[in-house]
View 1 (cartoon, rainbow, N blue to C red):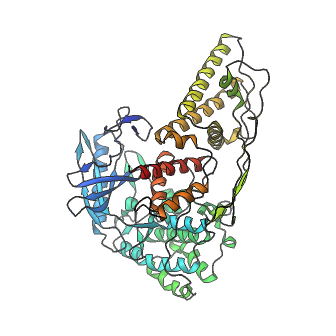
View 2: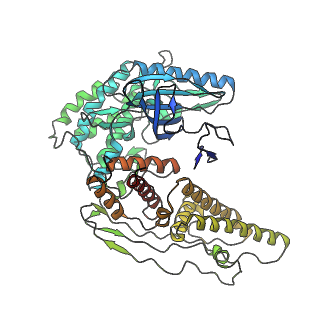
View 3: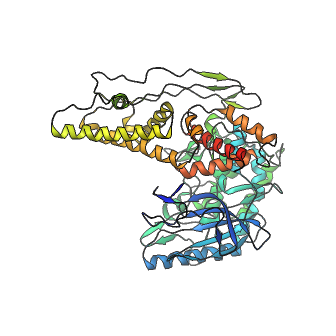
Length: 568
């Protein structure tokens, strides 16, 4: 089994560094850091490193989170700067002692081989992010109420007041970084990887390695002064918190709530009370000076809005039903729920210029526009599951007439090159036993997403379209590589294209009847999400397409269930 670096170079599992580029590889399960922290599993990966679930062997195997800070720097002065930033961040986190902030344990700087590594160890929070809670609500046909969001703000604003009093700005507030803790139903502010302390002399802080400035913050959630200039103030966090409130109360992402042409928020589409809207508008002011300067002032004004009857002040635990998985935003489907699941599966066009090679490499005089045949539409009612009606999506086909025949030597060379590429793609797909319908559907979706200029037109075998053909092959080869890295069983690969909500319902029943021990549906979602988004980090966090990437999500989940059934 191979492990891969961020550049997708394959390595043996026992390697600590990529043999191709030298990048540090993920820690393995069971590996022990500084004779104390045993790695259980990888929780996630971002631009600054990886996060692991671990157990503290010196504290009764207490669970904790180990964050690996892995700056990709070469020069000695850059490494020294990285150490300085790491030490500063650790110092800031040591100051934060609040019951709604994960406690800081220690910072580690071991040397493995000739390279320095930096780790932060913090409390593990058992709960769900508000992002996942929002997804769960929407998949059941609902969303957070205004009263629930006001309660959330009332409980999290004191946390912001606490860190701001210490001149610390979080800089990355979003539904992902707010968790509802199971033990006491309190919101917890997590992921202080972007936290920075404000030097009194400057009023702002930004990371700089060599000549490259790194400005932190999520687009859509971070205000302009943070994204454009790297400047942050307490009101910058309040801005991000207000965006988070709008996202949770509407079930829509910021990009769908903000009119970038007019430069204002679409308040007409946001159904909240005028009092609450007035507070959020002030928090969302373009100029920092027009916002609330302190979290305490927001709390005071919220008292009026809080008088609204709270129908459910404590957010109940919601069973996750995956019809469109992740870490995934599903706002587009919030109003499309009914009592049936309709899965309309269409024929996916096999790129016609591949067919001569798939059959016998004999050139043809006429090329069909699409694969013959259409998969039958499947309509079913899944009992006990709130389901989604999936719209039919028609993807344009890649149409290529026959490749150039034996003409000039350059034509013949081009033909031979295309033949080799086609053979490699077809052979690899067949070896992995991936259904061709699913495969070509997914490759076409990737291709058109990355090359929108090609949509609506037919490709030809001319030199003019050579670059686009090359890009199609790159998409196909990359998908095959990702599916190979997923390390799925043959049976689960063969089923790609045929998974549905019925499969998930069967897994849920197995879990609820105790056939898989103490494993939970939430754990299944979390484990599957982690693996899926390590493979496809650039996939939209909106609802996954059920005929393409949603199928891969299901296959990963099916593999996890199979492992649990076999006791692995």
